[in-house]
Length: 592
Image (cartoon, rainbow, N blue to C red):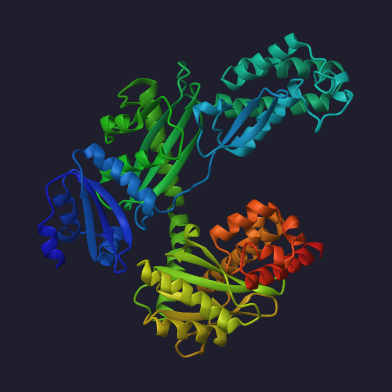
């Protein structure tokens, strides 16, 4: 059937989606010619990660577009929506540090991190810097050299800093505006790239300290001068037009692409990003798609410098920025620098990549073999608990291919008002997998329950009533609350797992995650004490009744003062009794 479907693909641009046996999208790609690209997976000699991808494909879908540029945009949106297993691996989602200058209520510097920066925010930012240590050290140095406000809070009188000329007296607001303006100009000029200002300031202060025989402090400033030289002067290449630009290049080896982006701010390299992903399809398409996806979550500079394999027209039009391929001069040297950094990073980290894969995919594959499962792409784990001795709740976490999928976590308020693990588990499992069937959600390959035979039997009974054949296992903990045993849900036998193995750490991580998620739900309710959070835990109070209660009482305290009869004017009396009891337990718990 797949062979016949391949013959019907049109020779048009568009995006294609590869799916596994559970109809889950595991890879999204784009092509100028869909017919040629999709057929190449099944008729060519594929190896490595591409071969592994093809082995899991049971179906594919595609959406045609009018142009290749539209295909790029569609691909970006689909990857963002579905986060497919094989698109980008080993991605580092960290953000980079900036130095932020704040004018009001008083001038100060701080280190900030932002995933995205909008012009309308009007923040005065410099960076990103190579690392947070460098940014903090520069901030500390500027504070030592200039009379910025250094103390916490708002004292009524000026302190020692003012008397030794290291503060302008912001507490008494008796500020010399000319000194303030000159100080700000110096700091901003330095952060924009004028190194001479700070160097001269350091040399001047070193001379003063030396004249006062304070050689130790002078030596400390000398070390700071060396640090400034290393951070700001070691760059052999500068572009003095002060345009913010990124330089992008890559290196390919062993089927892995190492993408290097150098951040140039005010003409100097202040940091970079290196990420790696497995090459699944065409090299040129993959690197162009990577760049377009990268800038969906990062600031787009005024200019991009790229190598010849990048499609400058498509990237420039989609990102609405200037894209150039430099052939000579300093810009070409910057491009070569990005290439060399990409190459070095990949060579140095190949061993680490292999180790990380073994820890995640390897442990997941070991568990699959141990339980004799054909596939183990999705694990759903459950933990039951109670609030304040009653009012049971449950949490569910999801692991996809060995990694947590936090967007798919779910929490449940349970109608059973007693410590009954068996019936609590039955209710939660029924509600979860009845919804899976009705909404045609992805069926997991394995269900893990936090407990022993009792919880396993409850889970199996419900699955049997829903005609679902899903493997179930139980995770038991010892007296120290550490994962101790894995129970096979089919035979109820204990499966021995060495504590030093990757699979043991993997199962421990899953169990800790679901327990943490459930406990955090409790803490959230206790700490926030919000009326909405409280009402979410009462069976029989839906969105409409919750809105009416919030409108009338507005707070937990006022709701606690209401009688059952008063509450019953909005909700049924039986529900009012349950609510009143819960509010009492809630109040007692807060007092402990």
